[in-house]
Image 1 (cartoon, rainbow, N blue to C red):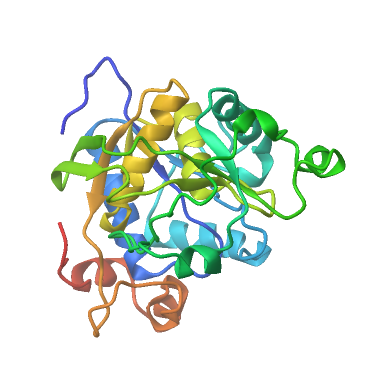
Image 2: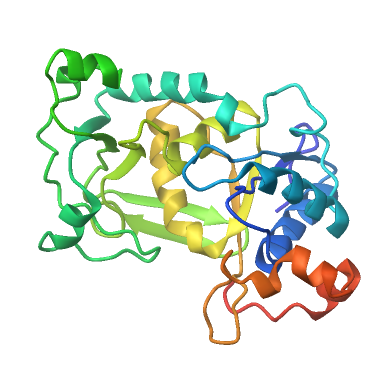
Length: 297
């Protein structure tokens, strides 16, 4: 896909500091960088550090160091600034809360008190392609106008007596379609391939889907490059873009890198972390030459 010369290409790297970056991250990010360069654009580094229960502060510095070592160069980010600062998600909560209020006032979301166990135990709750359980609709009858957006106030006035999340109501039966720059045409049916999904967690933290949409729109990202395991997430995010009145970017989903057992790489694969490979004397050029053939895409 070639972008119009009248529209500056803006790509992004969006790692989360919940562990060391591994070879799979590097390959996906490398595709993002190559696409930015091929389109005469620029690259943004965003630190997705909103999950305080999982990220560690030391991983942020290690993340930037490992990316620089591998050969990545970004023009905007937490270490160099830019016109859309801050580039740490933990400093952008006011944007997420504003988006949440817009969704609530528009009737797109509802408060949900279901736990993960409740959903797993519910009948007729199959898994989607990305391993998220289809929500059975238990709390769909909850009305958005009855629950204040501020959790502390909601508790004071007795609206809720247990923790709740905010869940997006998908338009059952509607087909969400888009053309992926790598995987081609994609179609997902709301209510079948994806169910109502969380946009704000019960611990008062924005969910990935909402934070990602808000930041990509606010930072003017024109193409999102990420792994093929997030294709279904793209359908969810397209619904959020529409509900928020925002234009979605283009999407390019890369093949997944698998381990010797055929499982996709994760941060549990310490032996394939960039830091470990570097300590073993590997160079970025060696790693790029030797990384495994893709199995998807």
